Image (cartoon, rainbow, N blue to C red):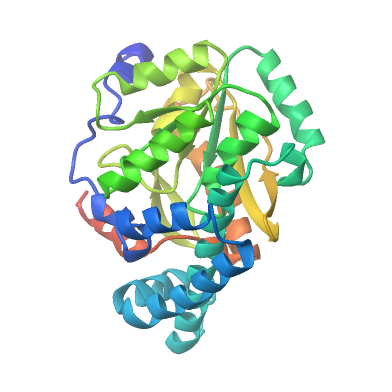
Length: 327
């Protein structure tokens, strides 16, 4: 099967196997809570929003037992040997960090900053980097994980750098949340491609790259058979294969990016070195090596700030079940 044919039949958009829709459905991400937060932060001062989030996440931590234990189990490899009770206490830090990231993102939409420098630190070198990458004319593929404030990255690219952006995303489990997130991106001038909604998703992505645009994807969860194996914290895991397949086919560089909260309403984008997926060796081997580089970059950020890793289901169980499914 040649490269073009493989792109036309890439699993993204209709991959085999069950779709893990419940992975993104949890009490903090349903339509009622997300909608209330969206409207509340538009009128309430930040300290009050933070206070409500602080109390609300404590209540969630106490009542959402399965979510609390799932976060603790996910953090086990990050803190080997730590007792379950201590890991569950860390889960509260994760929930509170998630709430602050959501509040800060929605506040930035409600009260647009005068410049992106009011939100983001260390922008000048990244302007130069993206200018250089854009000069190659192949587009850029941004990849990140469910880590930090990835949604505010839309503000970074559109308002901070003034570059065209398309976000490739799985539809949210809550239709209300999905509509709101899509509308938010559109209001910022970013396109959204929803995977599994069209047979030509891969070709849509390729057209954006051919137009020298930036395409952003979350890579640390796979969809069906759209996956490539990596090692994360010494454990086998699956990452999404499509962004690396696209990079191999088009020559677009892959840039891992992680956006971390550094203060009240302030963020630092941390970009790893651009990755060029090799074309002078086996395609599958080249894709796997590139995926491992991304996994290593994500692991380094999680080690630095484990409270920013937002997996609210049992991540490692899902990885093991996917591997067992190959047997």
